[in-house]
Length: 125
Image 1: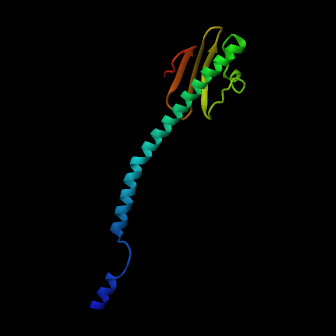
Image 2 (image 1 turned 90 degrees about the vertical axis):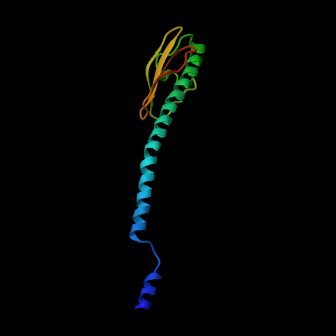
Image 3 (image 1 turned 90 degrees about the horizontal axis):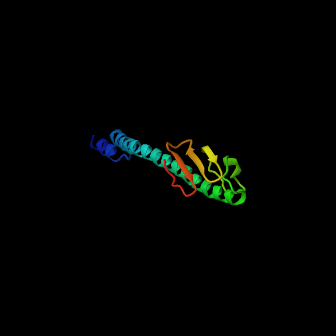
């Protein structure tokens, strides 16, 4: 009988309770990490839209130097005037006249639409 008990004590491995505790800890950590990851991703998408809008302002100024008016369409600025937009960043309400322009941009996975009226305007949301 004693030999049988010693044999049971010598077995290696984890008990079911130990495994359940480890799984519970991993679940708690995942419940904390996943929402934080989503928030970081959304902020990075918003930053991408803001950066593209800032680059579009620079492209508008380059366009103005060539044409003495501001562009009415974002397509006029892409490539030739140094604007290369990020994936999934959309420009809306792009308007340009002789002495001013207005543009709005957002990322399809973000939650903020950024606006600028220029020249020399600050980007706001």
